[in-house]
Every structure is written in structure tokens, then in C-alpha cells.
Amino acid sequence: MGLILLEALGALVLLVVIVWWTMFSGRDKGELPAAKPEPKSTTKTP
Image (cartoon, rainbow, N blue to C red; front, side, top):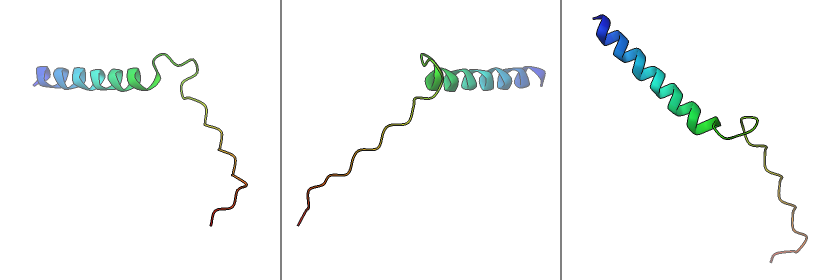
């Protein structure tokens, strides 16, 4: 029983590490800054 719990805990830790690695690894301050909104065009469309 203890071995099953240990294996489940190891799988959970591995999942958390994979998610953290794909989301935050290589970024200076975590999330990327929000994109600037595009300016509205002044041309009229028919």
C-alpha cells in the first residue's frame, strides 16, 4: 500500500514539474506582458 502511495506522489510531483517547466521556464518574470491593443482604423467600410 505504501509503495502505491509513493508512486502516486512521484507521478504528481512529475506532473507539477512538467507544468511549471512548460509555463515558466526561460521567462524573466513569469508571465509575458499583455499585448498592446491594435489601433482602430479610420477608413470607412461599406
